Image 1 (cartoon, helix red, strand yellow):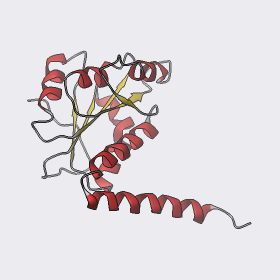
Image 2 (image 1 turned 90 degrees about the horizontal axis):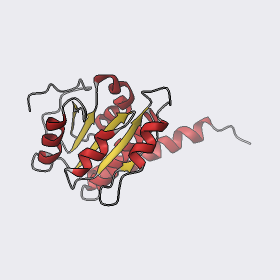
Image 3 (image 1 turned 30 degrees about the vertical axis):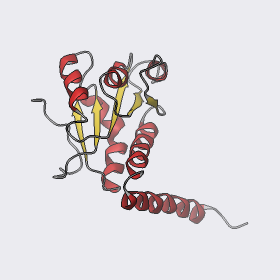
Length: 174
């Protein structure tokens, strides 16, 4: 695969467990919360621009080789017709988590409906539209990986406890 990597927070020398793919670099802003959370949770990952429409052969190659390259989960973001998550899921048995991007006048509802309506046999876990969906995709990917990684499970517990502590701190006594 000759395509350049998408800029991420820091390069990680460990073999990636999560692949984060997007249809164009304009989707990076939406996916940044996912990349940030994967870094925070110390989950090795890679990010790539893999367009279902402009580089379909490369998208197929990415999906078909993902498992043999050590990936265990793929997060795929797309706007509009949102073919990337479904077409990726059609070419791998790995879990694919779809993040709808608000890239059109419909604010991501079109992408959401495209991703959520996968035909029987081509499952894509569909998350919320935009940055909240990206963050939850990273958390869901981490939870999938944590099934067989106790240290990651503990990092997730600590992350969740810290969010709860933030809410309690911000809640007035009454």
